[in-house]
Picture 1 (spheres, rainbow, N blue to C red):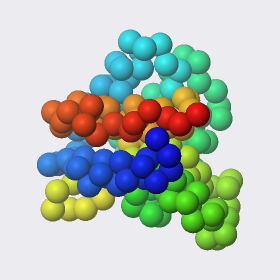
Picture 2: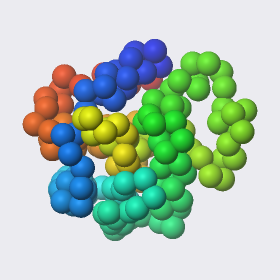
Picture 3: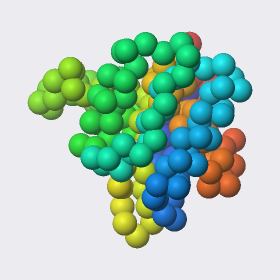
Picture 4: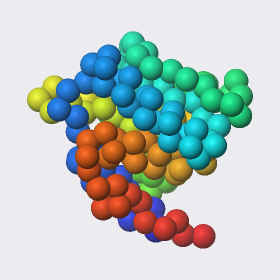
Length: 166
């Protein structure tokens, strides 16, 4: 899949993966679902689920480093600022030949790399995000999408990204 196809798929994911509600219990459910997926697959990742300004679930699994929470923070900043997934934002910038720095954002604080996905609540809008760090960015993004699909009872196969072009 090329950049254009990936971006179209991410746009669809962002439109389709909306929660009926989001609270402490939902954050716990999403976080523990991601943790179980990661443990089953032996993935060394950090998982962060939050309302903007308030962390609700956080875990660092074996194999992570102090860099992973920094990646989470920087990806969360992109979702907070632009209300779209960090992967979608990165693809959009690539297609336009732009960088976050050109938009006035220091790379020390912002990362348009996959892994942070907006939590969109029906009737309320985007209220937070769920973020993963530790895998290649496309895999970080897709792990979050898979967990959201599972939580919502949606068919992941119909929303996942296609094969990556080499």
